[in-house]
Length: 500
Image 1 (cartoon, one colour):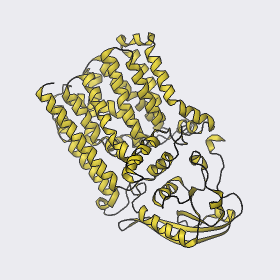
Image 2 (image 1 turned 30 degrees about the horizontal axis):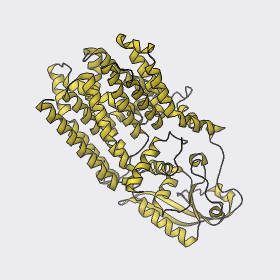
Image 3 (image 1 turned 30 degrees about the vertical axis):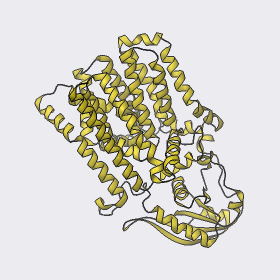
Image 4 (image 1 turned 135 degrees about the vertical axis):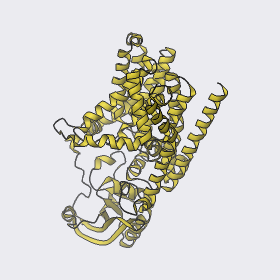
């Protein structure tokens, strides 16, 4: 490695370490989201699967809380640190596929400054480990291409298996790999080799706990996730959300570079055929599905996580390899120069806004309901009401409120969701003795009250109204009801729609 390349590697490593450090600081001060609190509850009861997703996110959180405790930082610690091996995998992928430290460094930096990677590894969801696993799928496929050694297919299988343990979206890696092999003449020999099939068996073996869990639970997780978009629900309005949300999550300048890179790979034939086709198939196979999905149901921006590793490699190819006319070259150079500063500023602004609301003048924004600002104070008030009333358990209507209560109330407090018990099937039922006494019910204040509770209990009395606030903004007002005299079963154990 020459002196110039060594400097590029060193500076890239230092920048990525600084970005990881920034995320760790933000993680310690940003209240937990309701999804993170939900997955944190999973991590206390590890299993082969859960109603919503495979189990990898629970294992990531469990590892972090073993190091840093049941805190916001503990929940997020390992997810954030996984950005380091993720960056290595993308760096090496780009170096193998397109050569040179500059292309490799650009890829790793661009991935880290996207909001999907910076916020997506800080706010722990199944997409965080999926993004990391996807980076290694690309890296190990690049190693197959570089070395021609069949043993690398076992590593590909392991990475795909880890991705499947993160989120079911990873199933599209199979078709993408098959299209790649079929599209490149020199790679078709692998169809006659046992190695790719052995790699598939490795992936299947790693994924088997999820299959077994679903078999024991009426296949509810598969049915829930794979049945999201139904052909008869044709609603193309959702496709209009795709490009704006991806521009935001990729950050605008990275998005422009990535789009130009995909164009260059296809029309300028930048790079070798096998490298170009690998990037294109790993990107377009998944994107094609989500475009179809968006014709029938909403596609969340973070669902595109698996395509970001090939997307940023394409962006780096646009910046460093493709030939452009002078006007296009100026655009590419501008995007490359300012992509990192813009991405960092967008990340910092989002964290400040989520925690304070300053940037919107304390008005509502997209973060206000999902990030648990004000929940620590609200939970203290709810606990004081619980103690005064003598309630032995706290109930909630939805999984988000239930999870926030479990995370922010004193450890050991009985907390349960009154409905959707399938969400908690791995966690055991509350002690019947705790459900037999007075209960506290926490839900957003509703003018119509809770007619269902009136049918379940002899007496339902609202004893408090409490607010969750972000600065001067009242995010939600909760009605706190005291439930007495249960007429029968307190928890609704009706099977979910997927199991009926």
